[in-house]
Amino acid sequence: MPMNENYRRPRQPQVVRARLLAEANLIVVERGLAGLSLDLVARRAGVSKGGLIHHFPSRQALVDALFLSLLAVFEKNIEDRIAGDENPRGRFTRAYVRATAAPCGGPDGSKLLGAFAVAMSHDAPLAAKWRDWVQRQLARHGEESHALAGRMIRYAADGIWLEVCTWGDAVGTEERDAVVEHLIELTYTL
Image 1 (tube, rainbow, N blue to C red):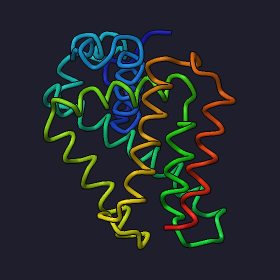
Image 2: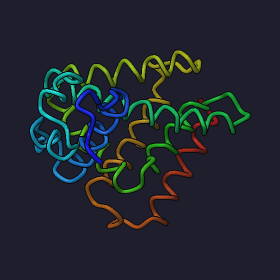
Image 3: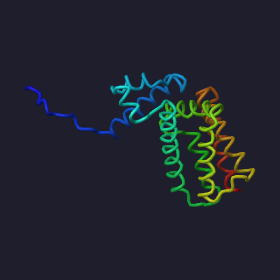
Image 4: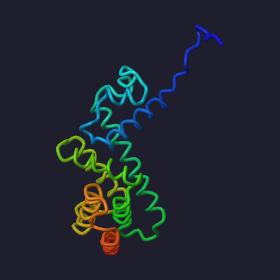
């Protein structure tokens, strides 16, 4: 059947943007943030580089969008856990501990979080986005950001997830689960 010369493929910017982000996520999981390039994302998503730049004018814009997308998933994970917790005392920190110990997306989710953790160590604007997000969550859920015990518990949870990202199951899930449960118990005293 001959193609109509007046036919134009319907534009679906949300679909293209989602495909670009999905491919960028896969690349970061496979290669880390250092391996993320606009050319590679465009090629793997089947989009021209100009099409990619229409959605993400720079590599930094793409990285920022990936980070915000990751934060949205992480926040949803926390909110789902909060919804099932009837005790308001330490509820956000409990959900944070559980969400960091078992990130959404399994091993790929851990690798993605790990890639951004490494990036935050030398990318001040990215680190500020994370810090601001945590501060907003603490305020929203009535936990004090300067409370020493809550901060220590959240730092310990960050260490657990970093261990999962870097060592996998080298420590053993039983030992890690025991630490997580101990941290959870501590949240009831916040």
